[in-house]
Image (tube, rainbow, N blue to C red):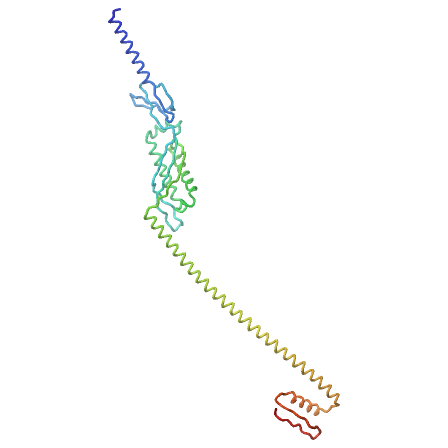
Length: 313
């Protein structure tokens, strides 16, 4: 074989080796540990959704590559999401305000093929849209006050609403990981109305307290008057009872005196041997006159013709 033929042979062999090396290098595709992959033909663009590849190096041929999806958590921040709350009562309406929501989710590895068939790379916008819809639909059943007084319960309620919405057909091929209720932003107009409402409530409470104080004062006056009337009644009853007691005592004393006088007169009549009624009356009369303080009586003698003489004191 000539020298020229040998050079041509070596050149052809070298070209073949280089081509083989190049083809081998192009036949391997790589996936990071945080990636999922679906095999795709470069020439036709067709995607094989029957098999999902995880992180690693794969020999898929020079005409194949990977369509990649994230295997780690997706972080989403929904800032100033406008919602409407429930009314505090049946006769009141809710309040419009904005929420900051942060959540994360992961794709289900075994469902990456179905995810690609249904929404391909638009799955992020679909997930965010359903999340916003679920939060807004659930917010209308939560009062504005509960966002501050029962924050954790409201956060759990919104999370459950999102998970439920994701499972509705067609179900999303992902799982909710973290979910946090962030800042609650109140529009200036709403804040002003809330402040005016609070001020009006305070004024109403103030007026109610004034009315209650007035009623309490009136009731106190009534009670004082009742006590004074009761006091006057008690005093009058006491005075009447005392007067009655005095009259009874005086009557009783007079009766005792009269009885004593009667007994004394009877004993005197017996001792003086006075039995004539006229004499008894005369003696009794003389005793009565002698007991009077405004009359001075002096008896000089007494006989059948005597006259009792008196003179003024």
